[in-house]
Image (tube, rainbow, N blue to C red; front, top):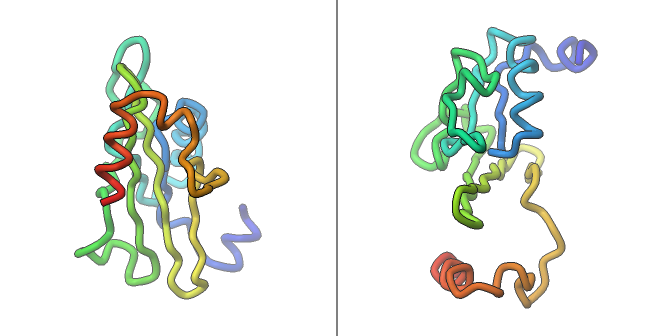
Length: 140
């Protein structure tokens, strides 16, 4: 990291783009290593089997919820845009991922939501009527 900091400057913002435990377990320690940076998490963080507060999940006290979109605000200084994807795959679970678009390089950054996309949605998304309705709703 030090080489990147030397080249580009201090860490200003950190985003935990997911509700998945494998992200939370590393995000808190990483954020504490850069306490001057803003630290954002998606707004539907949860724990299983008990839904605990962010501080119990190892996230630092200065954790902020990431707005669902950057449209209409200038939180990234015009350099980035973001959207939060939220899917409720089943009872007691939640999936969120953040898509960021870096305007100067025309680069999209996505953590977990990228997979092979074809004309036909994956079977797991069409097996249950609720998922099919959600796909059709969001595809409008």
